[in-house]
Image 1 (cartoon, rainbow, N blue to C red):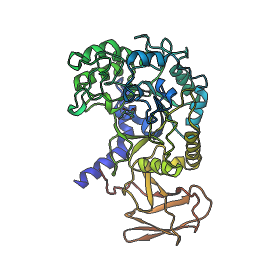
Image 2: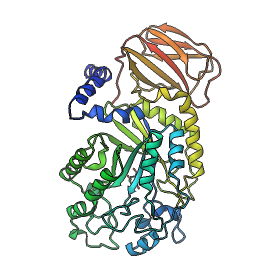
Image 3: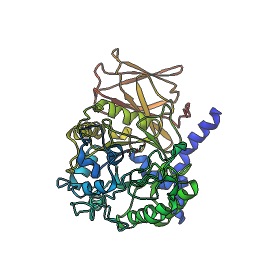
Image 4: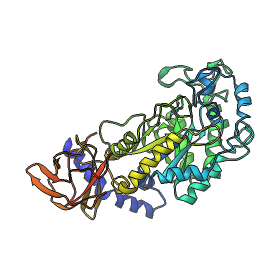
Length: 450
Ligand code: FHN
């Protein structure tokens, strides 16, 4: 079995681009061509921002709410609509948000166009439950973000809550058999009368079409919580997207067994995968803004997650939850600056690389890039050896070039029977992760972890 996996690994690494080129000559777009920019990008910003953000997690003395505010605080729809009317994020600045993402080394942003509350954060013509007609803001933040992304060279992508919508009367829920578990039973208590197709036809599909028509190139349609959406209903949505924007990537939450890549939420898989995948993660414990939540992941954790995910062939979608005034919390900005400082020096170990041919090392992680028939390995060392020696078990290929990414100090390489040992400076160039670059002869058909 391992020989088959190694062959697939070799084929993907060496011939993937040829396949994309063939497709580029035809009118069809191959999956490899569609995914190319995204797999090279490796790192994006997730933005959970809506009416709920102005509560900062607080409601009637409770402090653990966030983007689920309407549901968890049991707010009747009319009261929520009245609350939405007060939403006026006067400090929102698309240029500032996109600059923060760009300086962090992020290559795309995924922003909530409509979360489970059914409130459109853009100028939707489908109904008045949106930021133009249903709030005080009178501006279209998605339009501003789309334009700013284009100016700064990031891909603009949108999140859409597909199977949960607490504004629409025909949105039943029941993922994994949990009937009505995430439905709005306050305003629409008779679950059995709800017809999902009516909601899809009346609201979801028209809004998906609006987003793919009025906001320029959409890098990814990031669907969430498909709940009772069938594979057939999901496939129809995929077909609509392919028709409107063939290059738009679709994640796996558009329906059962559908989509261009797999989503992992708040976790990093143990092993690598040859298929495209993404881990999305919060910086504290909430997606939407919660002012009481000060349980922040450290910058070191975030940088190690980025490297670990890339070493397994995945993308890292890291979330921010801006305030009701439209400000990204200082704690998030501080961490994103630290990630940006690291990636500014070591980005070539992340962008355009793919999974480690060796799996994980106990001292850190490895990413690789095949160039002109040779392999460039990036060893990201989390635990720098105190004795100045680092063993790379399993590396049998001849080492042609070797250096530190973040230092001019010299290193040495010595071949062993089943790997190499590197002689390193006593002090790590970077306290969080120091990168050693090795160029080796040929392609490595190492072990491949599923
Ligand atoms: O319920 C949502 C949640 O609010 C958040 O949007 C996450 C992001 O992936 N998705 C759902 C939970 O899986």
